Amino acid sequence: MRFENKVVIVTGATSGIGRETARRFAAEGASVVLAGRREKEGREAVEEIQAAGGTAKFIQTDVAREGDVRSLVEQTVAEYGRLDVAFNNAGVEHAGPVDEVTVEDYERVFGINVLGVLLCQKYEIPAMLKSGGGAIINTSSILGHIAMPGSAIYNASKHAVEGVTKTTALEYAEQGIRVNAVAPAVIGTDMIDRFAGHNGREEMKALHPVGRIGRPEEVADAVLYLASDSASFTTGISLPVDGGYLAR
Image (cartoon, rainbow, N blue to C red; front, top):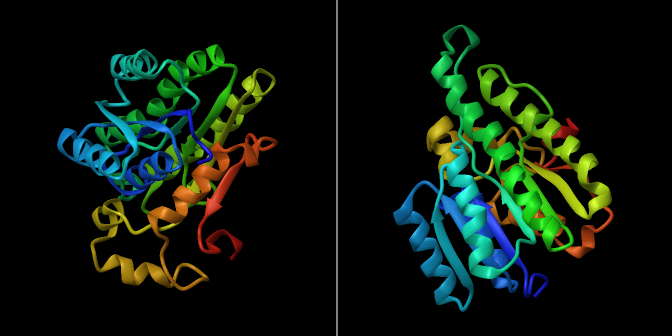
């Protein structure tokens, strides 16, 4: 029960890594606010948590819209009185060569992957400061550390998340807010199926020295560690959860 009496926001919580991490926070005692664009899936995730005895609430949110993000944080504090942890996980994928990229592609990916993180931090940090500090974890990617042909916009967006994470960590280190990132490799989620097709899961196993793709719960383990008191001296890092991918 590492997060008993803690209040946590998880964006991108309607599926995959976000949904699993929200479930895990609730299982360890937190009151969890799940944020996402898909209301049906969000409410199903809340019902699952509540059925297991946890405390959760869904707030429909598009992280690329400042009004939505402001309302998310305001409703969270109004409901639970504070904010201790935020997992800024909402993200979208994009694949295609540079000469086929459109302005609309760029605006969509950067609007969610980068502006979304910036807006979340903009409103989460003041709420955390009122409670004496907190922990923020942003979802980056191994493609925030390296490049992959055919994914320039996504690569660029995750490199930006790395920069935002490090800068914010330095800005608020003395005020008791730790800011870190997780950098997953290929994880078995709906996003991977959209990116590479269902058969792509098999093809991508060989990219990882451990011989398989990752599971959402393995990323959740890393997020909960970074959010916990066990990581009290850890800020400004990007923690790969990658089956050895970056060691090659």
